[in-house]
Length: 215
Image (cartoon, rainbow, N blue to C red; front, top):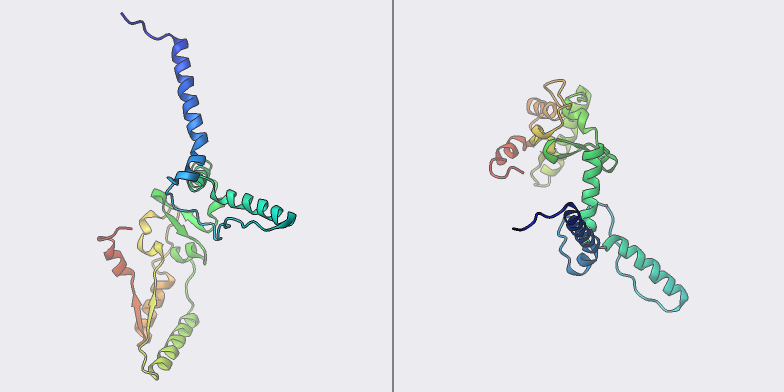
């Protein structure tokens, strides 16, 4: 009859497994440097990573090469893309730290919404056009249409809707509208009532296209 493993044997096996996992994680960046198995999307850093430096003659050239090699390694070491993604996700979800997402608001199911240009105020209907501003838009677009029409060019003004106009269900629960109108709905209604400029509203078309391609 086989004896059940003692607690010391179980502890030793657990330690061995822990060491193997630790060594595996420790070597993953090195292995990825040569095997390139990390296929995560690159982080949006708004800059070009440095290229591998060239060796130049002289002591100054050597120092420049070493500094360039350090900068290159910092942006190209193995599993860097996955590690940055895990770090950002952990800060956001575990600590509610949004320093890495200053230009976005985090919605449900991991959706992000761009918040620059007062997007939140526009969506909630807090900021609206004044009558003078709507008239200015009408004047501008009619002037552009007439100028192009004199040269045989047809003018169509297209407003590309923001993500929150097409996927509002993923917005955070606190983002509630305070009125039925937005700047966009104001603009379309005004132009339809006061102008003959061809203004193309893509909102409904894109909402219907979600049935074919949800995202």
